[in-house]
Structures are given as C-alpha cells and as structure tokens.
Image 1: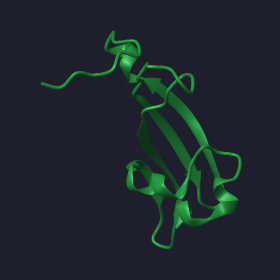
Image 2 (image 1 turned 90 degrees about the horizontal axis):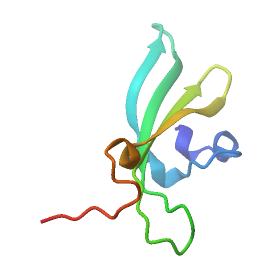
Image 3 (image 1 turned 120 degrees about the vertical axis):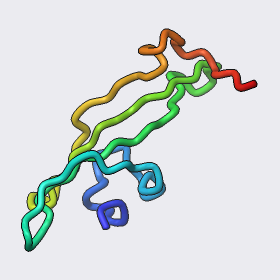
Image 4 (image 1 turned 45 degrees about the vertical axis):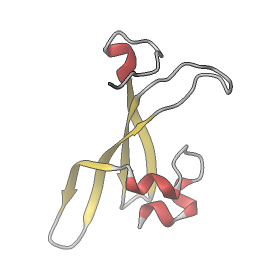
Length: 92
C-alpha cells in the first residue's frame, strides 16, 4: 500500500496515518493494473505553531503507480473560500 512505503512518502508531507483520511477521486486502470490514482485529504493546519487560527485545507494528490511517484497537484483553503479566514469553527 502506498501509505506504508517510506520511499514513496519521502519528500512529501504525507504520513501513514493519512491513509484513513484519503478519499479516492479518480483513477486509471486496465485489466492488469492501476496506472495512476488521485485522492484528496482534508487537513487542519495552523499557519504558525502557537497561532489561534484554524484552517481547513483540501489537498489533491496524484500517485503515479507505474512511475512510483506521489505529488501534490493542488490545494484549496476551504476556510478562506467560506469567508472564515482562520476563525475557529463554532458548533452549537
């Protein structure tokens, strides 16, 4: 599995624990094997270590199975798209 291979994750911000957060978005396969797949992960990074800000970011990743390469292809700050730039979400 991709998330268990340290060589594939080297140089990325992905970790084995992210496997539970990954959502398959698209893939290409033949009868014999999968050639690539794209997946998304929602994260909640803080811009600075002690910052009170809270962001929700959707990262898009592509795993080229045949080439043995994983790369981030895009990301979207969902908090900013909603107009809540880093404000901690309040739940009733």
